[in-house]
Length: 464
Image (cartoon, rainbow, N blue to C red; front, side, top):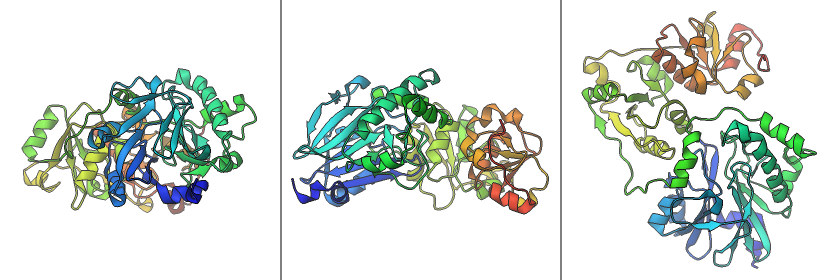
């Protein structure tokens, strides 16, 4: 054993490259095996960052391991097998319908000096594996996927609410198994802060077994029942597209022969697509959407969380037309859509929003106001329940953005719609406008700004 491999932290510094997707709250990993080959763990279909990291080190991906059938993104393993000849390593219990090495508990893969051992850790999913990376008998780290994550554990309700408790009990046993590894073993989870697969807030995305035994409140649970109560109590809503992707990953995403494109469309072509059941998605900043947009367009500003809201609010079966702003990265739109299985991208309005009225078409506007100008309007808060409970405007009507399309009638007349900064609120306003509401405004800011402007103190709790 070399000194570099004796210390898990030094190994990580020298050989492990985390690839963080801030929008989905996930980490993939590229492991430099030291001989020009690499192991990829939980790589998503958007392989741009992984490719760049591999190219910098002159690596070819020889192995692509998936800890579970992901619900929040399409796996990149099939593409890596096609492009690099990577051997796909995954759970035999997942019944994947494409070539892979089916692994059961205790199975080992020789990586050429290092060994990857599969550990059955069900809970987040039935077929979940963790992968223990070994140098001889020495544990370097464990890729825990959606099992043990930093100061938490991943949600157990993705296979249906009726199975959430059963899987939470399996998660309890899985975390206890991982906690039995040596304290110095590095913990390399897939899900992290910002993931709707349920992760605690915080900046740390990796840890050690010993640190988690000291700080993870779920590992501190005195018994199984307490663990289950704590885990289930922390489950919030999750995007609708999660219900589709596990099966898509079991079948295997289609191999892409080239980077997808976003062709330019004329206003006439856009109108034709709308008439055929398509959607217009306006990815410009909220202020630009407010100043003028195509009636009925959905505002989803292009940012890290773009894929989440695209997949939560729109079907994957209808053609999508995008309205883009100057300088926006078209490839970012395409890859964020493709990594969650949205491939019916018809194109973008050529010439941007200015081309729409120039062609004689009507555009709509939305009031985007500061807290001082919000007046006495009813306040609609579209943040997640945990955010709302942490502090909200007294008397606010709470309707999560993800459920707003079905609850538009619950919004009061003439509201100011608000979130934390304004992006989600503008999306909410566009949904309400699609439902026929034109009597609204969007708050430029969040509850703290509103409280400061009105002299009202925020209150905590859900009010239930």
